[in-house]
Length: 337
Ligand code: 13P
Image (cartoon, protein in one colour):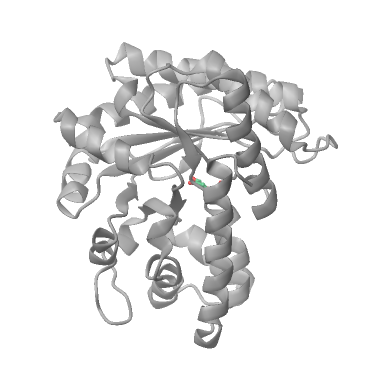
């Protein structure tokens, strides 16, 4: 593990006023959740065009410090046959790669999911480093269902052990691990439950990292904001989201963490931006020793994809919407909205 490489990657990724675009959907998710809703067929070429819209745009480097790609995209090129990795390197945008193989239903923990993909990961990470990736993402999924007593500590612990093993392998390959234990916002739980569950999850994750000797200084946490469940009937208020999220993080994560980035998790584009801004404000109020920025997928992509609808003649208009969202997220990152 060469710490100067990890430090350089983290410093670039956490540059104030910039954030990380998560455009790392697996082929299945890209086809079903991104392209099908806008009436576009899921083919390698259409997935390439979708990624070109976001990656190959003049000026996106003003707001993006990094992007998370999927394996297929890492090896694809723009319409002029310039590899996406070269386009990103020229813009000094740090390249990340999703390396987990998805959250699978668990036999051991009914109703919960455990993330797959550790087999052969060491070799895959070495290969991705050669291709230019400097950070990697692993997503675990934590479901809240208070009626069924979910999540269980057992499932959280199992996912945390795997996250820690993954982080250890990343460090061995000079890749910064972005660890993502996503607490889903789907459910009828209120915000206080979301705070408890997210805090408990993060505490267990950092216990397991510690047990494996993984230094949090070289780790980026990708977390959910603390929001009420989407079927809870509780109003989502940005100020409350900001105050609760910052309190939960200060209670649950190591002070020396490399950085914190937020997923959008199904919030609308506007909600995610406003909540990010409120978190930045609240970090000033409560004090926070960690740096944070956005790492949204849906909250950036969806309005842009709708405007694009797979048509070349819509690219310019879609990219205007894209820049506007990035600009607002970059302001929100500094609490300047
Ligand atoms: P969302 O912002 O759509 O939650 O996606 C972020 C992500 O990386 C999911 O793994």
